[in-house]
Image (cartoon, rainbow, N blue to C red):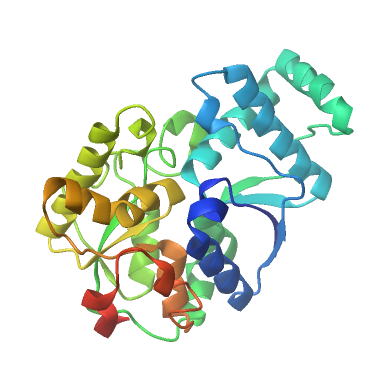
Length: 288
């Protein structure tokens, strides 16, 4: 299996361990990754300033994947939803397609719709499959109680992303259970992490993240598992800051799913970048 690999912006700039875990897990599973050449931003950060620019940036990345001749695998929920929305527009709106291709002509690019767009969880679950993944398992992470966080843009708008049941998702839960860990119930599971509001209302953003962290902790989670770099940023990178602001201590580790999967298939903690996570793994190290 080979894919064009699109990291988005957050991962290479702030969350290198997400990328490290993905590359090492994919290597262990026999998946070849080719960085999407000349890729730019998906456009999501400027969507509410200029939809036209957002759409063109996303269409350009999709056209680059067409040129590279491989299906496009993304790591970020916002990138996935943005690219999916624009891909849908390109396939249903001929006028939009012509406008985009006219703009891309300066770079000798053209959107043709050949490359399939997949989130990394879809690669694990559908392209590889649970049975084949099971054959790679070297250890069971028993005793690990996980609060899984999907993130908003992986599930909504459901008519566009068509990823999972937006009201009762199960894909990430199933993949966590595959490792031997337990995916627990927690009331605020489907709440937003707060990241979309961070640029214009930091108090709201950090308050949302705090409520989710506290809810996971109250539900008896030993750690949280994310699948979106932006969500991971809020729960892991921002957790010490939230603790300082609210005068509280949580100390709940946060793993990106590929880190969890990597441990289960026999990779070492440094191979999946656990030493780079902001919140220490001390409280769960005996389970890893």
